[in-house]
Amino acid sequence: MRLHNGERAMNKLERTAIVSTLANIFLSIIKLVAGLLFSSIALIADAMHSFTDIIGSLAVFFGIKFSTIKSKRFPYGLYKLENLISLFVSLLIFYAAFEIASDALVSLHAAKQITSILPSLVAFFSFIFVFVLAKYKEKIGKAENSPSMLAEAKHSLGDAASSLAVVAGVTLSFLGMPYFDPIVGFAVALLVFKSGAEILLDSVKVLLDASLDYATMRRIEKLASKQKNVRVKEIIARNSGRFVFVELKLETNLKDLKAVSRLQKECEEKIKKEIPRIDRITIEIEYKKKPVLYYAVPLESNSLKSRIAQEFGLAKYFGLFKVDTKKRKLIEYSIIENPNWNAKHRRGILAAELLAEHNVDVLLNKGALHKGGAYYALQDSFIEIKKTKAKSFEELLKKYGGAGK
Image (cartoon, rainbow, N blue to C red; front, side, top):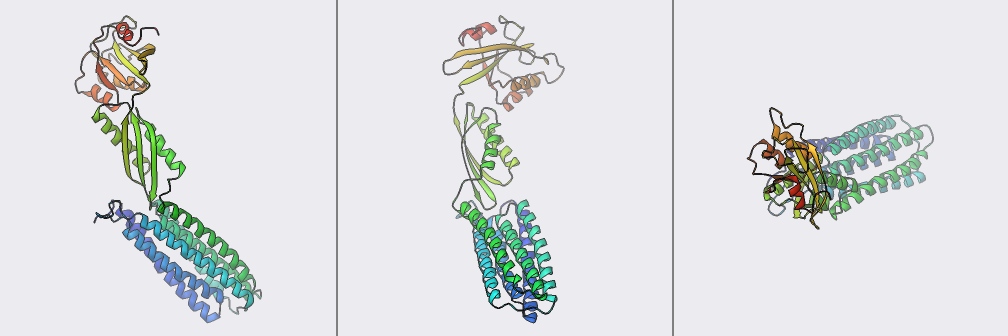
């Protein structure tokens, strides 16, 4: 077995889960003791509510601890374990909502005035403590893209709301209005139920391999489409725990296997860099001839009758032309100046960059380029290099349907 390379992030999540467990144990004890001493039904119920949080925190801890373990039987890891834990936590939230609602109804029939302010102070301390803890868990959960930690954060916010209701109820009971406690408690139960429903829905979507959200899918598509000579044919992506698995089908006009391999690697690296929570990308590339190809050829002068230049980097001009690949017909042509033909250094590289700026697909050259700066600059821009036997620009254009068309 082996662990995912994000082990440091996992340790942060584990520490947060442990802190949450210890905090809930502490709160449960003080609320239970205060509730029993002062006969506060609300505080006793809130203490029992906190006991359910202990179970939830432990479940999250074990889910985070084991979710990234990979083995022969589980080569993709146990990432969905976190979503399974989130599902379990959502059921605890439903239980808590039912518990609060039940206590509220019971209190309506057996409301007793509390004779000490101390239960209110305990409830208020619990509210502040739980609220701060919830925000801390939310921050860690968002930073590490952990659905189970975010679920726990939502659960803790529900606890904070119920503690606030207890503060109101106990205080009003102390002031001689005991029936406010169950009314506020029932309202809190509805909020807690809503949080549970949202977590349950998100967890079920992931466990059933529902597609990734539209915004992230569009982002992946845009990043892949920015690669030259690429058209996105299909994207399949899904969440698995806090990670994402992506399958991409791309089309390209590139034939060279090395160029295709480099394109695949660059595409994967760019997407993973922009969206770090993507754990794995499977890219399938299909060859498809572009309907229109943009050609370039080095020229000696700014003329249709210009001879083709012998050296790529020293060419004063470049002839550009578009060809309908299906009809093999010339669409248009133009001649551009090469402003760097007499540069002291990097002439070939600068010429390659010029062609890349004009979205050239194919360079037609007199001879083979040696594997130097210009060659690699053209390769990096995915510009294919082909030899031509034509002597002039006019002769070359006639091969593609005639000059001036």
